[in-house]
Length: 309
Length: 53
Image (cartoon, rainbow over all chains, first blue to last red; front, side, top):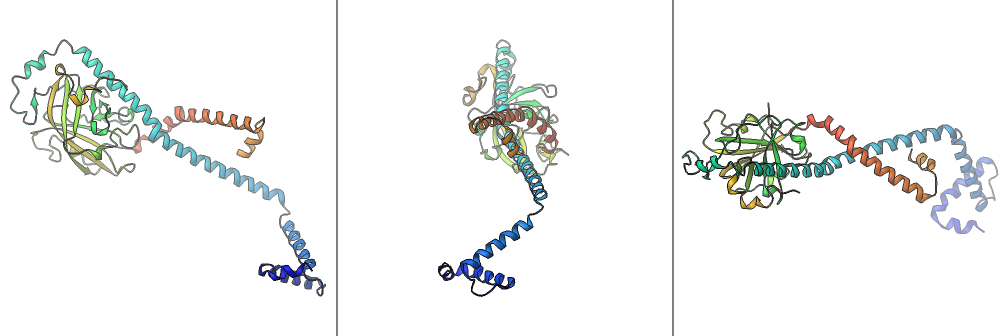
């Protein structure tokens, strides 16, 4: 009676036939088909399963070893991703806040120390030399090269953010300068405002990523450099992509190593493409003007120069 | 590993979850304060951004 509905459904036909065969093997074939036969079949299968699992201890040991190994691997993967996340975001937040404070501290100390002696700058302005073809106003004051790793300037690039400011230190050593989240000055290049090339480098894919938006610069964007003497306003000119050994971008006349300089340039270098760094991205700017400290900060950055985060 | 950890922890389910959350917070703090900066220092030489020869 029970067997009739089971045989109507096609999915049950196979076990029924199997049970038939099982019955035949055991030599008690006829008559006992249907519910009785399928019952035999299921008991047969379960007996076979338990027979295969007989070394239960070894199997569960292997299983738990594989389980722990898998958990270790998953944990390692999570830790690696945590590190990447930390490097890209958490570390950057900490470094950028330190950078903003350092930059503000530099500006404030310069403003405090040069309230009195601004005379040399003022006397220089009426007799502006003719060779400053790209500059207007006062002749740019050029400071002497500072000691290695010393923070000697502050960089403002409004295109990188309305309150963007980073320190510039002497030298481009990764551990002592660049990994602090600021920019580093190539020591073989000129100082800000000087005839030739003021070249700086910074990270773009970690350590605060100070130059992450270097590829978003547009022609004419201002790049301000503040030193103890005042503010140098450069205007972004063009981008260039070079191989990592393309040191000629640091020349007084970029890519023309032996030429005599006729312009006052700034060069920003960073890695490209993002997170791969098989090339270098180079941004050039031309000095537009120099604003002595006595004249106050240029209007665009007056609100953030010397102010804390 | 995590199953054993869960069994070793005392108390009801909410207490175990609380203990694990606190442990996770401590772990993240230790990682980001000491471990990750140390690893960062080890990795630095392979991350150049400068042009040089």
